[in-house]
Length: 61
Image (cartoon, rainbow, N blue to C red; front, side, top):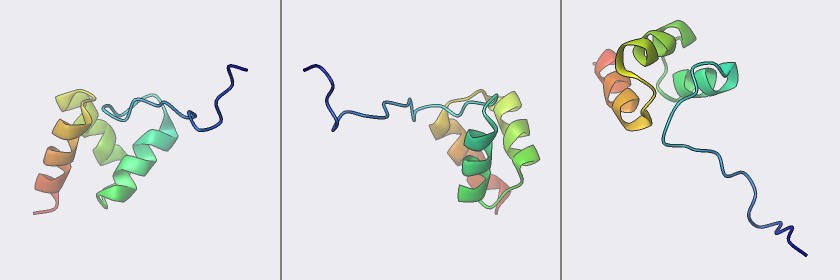
């Protein structure tokens, strides 16, 4: 049986999917920024989650 119940998900959490509204909203909520601000960050800096988290923290300073 090849269906392992413990190995589910497998999403790539190293990036934020700009075309997935739920991913953008989740990221925006985490850093208390608007989804529009989150999308602008993705447009400017790409979808690398580490880079986006650093830039989102700068917005809150």
